[in-house]
Length: 262
Ligand code: 2YP
Image 1 (cartoon, rainbow, N blue to C red):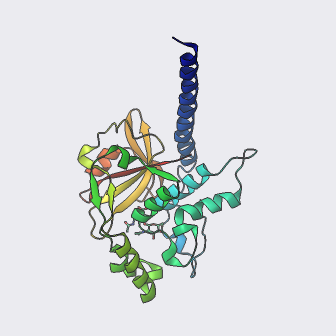
Image 2 (cartoon, rainbow, N blue to C red):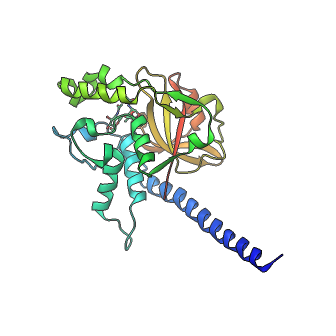
């Protein structure tokens, strides 16, 4: 074989090794950061403590979404001398949580995962690995928030916010997302679902797309969910497989899978 070919092959091997190391680095980085939250209490509505929308960072009390947001934001933030800059962390939370990374009232928060995911993919934060690996698609038909204003402090007495949410819902409706239907998800997961992937549990609840979030975590070959659990009232690794979680609920229909890009 000519010398030049050997050199090209060696170069590609080095690139492939570096990329693999980086990819595994991502998996272990997200899982390492997520495992730090084990036993942190599940507390809902931590983002509704202010009358006016402002950045809330409360890593001592999390729900399924804020847990995922804090872990992703931390995993995106460079570690310098063993710590991360609080300012850089906060900026990354804003990039994940708000439309165009701008806090501009309650409705600027990305309330629906359909928009939260699209925004993160557009901003280069996440990649939609379900879109790349699963042919099954679902169309969104969102109206849960505008049709349940009493369930949301900042909608209950604000016809203006409800009207804005209706516009947002209308702008999202009809869009499609790829997912894995629950009858296509084995207990031992799928080869392309990796530790640390963001798992969004899709739902048939009227007007909603997703009803829960967590991280993929393989335990003795079983694909489990590392998540802020409403029933356990804290961050846990599910005792049952993700597939069993889906099968136990009539309203859960499958999963979206997204991955942190480095
Ligand atoms: C989101 O709910 C809220 C956001 O307003 C809020 O309820 C909706 C449509 N959005 O900023 C965010 C953080 O508190 O939570 C989440 C909720 O899951 C809860 C938090 C959970 O399982 O712990 C996201 O939307 C993720 O799945 C759904 C779910 N909401 C409902 O089932 C109504």
